[in-house]
Amino acid sequence: MARRKIRDFAHAREAETLIECGDAFLECVDIDADATTIPREALRLPHQPGAEAPAAARLRHPEMAHIGPSPMDEAIDPADQRAIFPARQNGEWRFVPHAETFAKRRAETRRKLRRFRRFDRQSELLNLFFFYHDRAVRRVVVLLLWTCVAGAATARGEDSACAPVEVTPGVPPTRERVRAYAPVFESCASESGSTRLAIRRMSVDGTPLLLTVDPQSLQTSLEPAACWRCEETSDAAQAETRYLKALHPPDDPTRPPALVNAGLIHGAGGGAYVTGDLCPSRKPLDRAFFEELAVQGPRTPVMIAVSGGWIARHGADFAWLREKARSGALDIAWANHSYSHPYVRRLPDGRNYFLRPGVDVDREIFETEKLIIAQGETPSVFFRFPGLVADAALLENVRSRHLIALGADSWLALGLRPRPGSIVLVHPNGNEPVGIRLFLRLMQTGVMPLPLRPINEAP
Image (tube, rainbow, N blue to C red; front, side, top):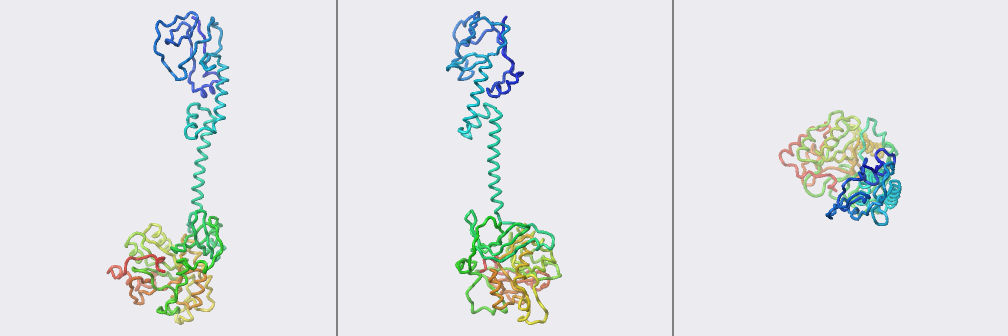
């Protein structure tokens, strides 16, 4: 019984590409010349009988519906080892030698690859990938996918690179990490259309940063300088913003003279604005005061006027306060209370505190701001004079640095009872236990005006 052998593609070196390109998974096929075929699919060998009766076609593939007769109308030489393969010729399917079929299919695959760029990337690309299994197609698909992922990651990276900066606290002397610190007043805009006012420029660990203020909410933030386009501005140009109106309030003839209680002493609306001063002290932080605030609810607002000398001595207490803010128990606004908080006992106020000869006001302000930033926090726009004592010249000096001077109309240790809108003052630095006890009593008896409000709402 004569047989015509079909080449075993699995053992031929060129078969890998052929099988992948043609989606064929044949290993070896033998055709018996005397075998009975499916009706209407005869091989038309010379000695093969025809089908007795026509039967319905059994289609394996739509394109195989009109396969033509085999061209093998002559005797078969058993020694003929040439492979045959079904291929389409002149619009019809024929059996042709393997080499010719392989060359045509390879050329067709290359033409499809050349047209790859015109395919729909979400449908035709996947079809080509799964039906042709060509390594080149897979490489292109993977490259496109990685390009999309990398583009998305780059976009997210750009967004995060322009987000407000949180400085990681360092080891003392931490303020040395903050260099080229300078006061500015610039109007800034970002690519997203946001606007801010920059009041400080600096470099933190080699990264240029801006201390910016939202001119309406008074919220401050540290921003990457590279993400903002800034130009110099003036108080007159920003006079209609809430920030400048708070910085230069109208004269109030009913308030005490500046020498006694400099700055804003009463806030807008009801409730109370709780503030605590941390003057330099050897005593530990009065944590009971802050615990009482925390039980009022999540993110209870409090303003802490902190001195640089207190931070330098109380690193653990400062870290504890930061954790209270990070956990959401408190919403802390960090005000500037000078660095050294100059004070000499028994000297009259007119020659004490910042009114002492030789006090460098800029150094007292900027060194504290640098220390707050180096410790991982952001200074607010508020400044409280040591002892709440200042004259008109000092008040103007602080305003020129774009800081809002803050006093108080309810210093509890002095017996000043709070009323709606009061700015309440206590000293939780261990030096004023009487004021802390009065505050706890007012809270527990319900005498303290509520709600407790953030200091940014006071001006």
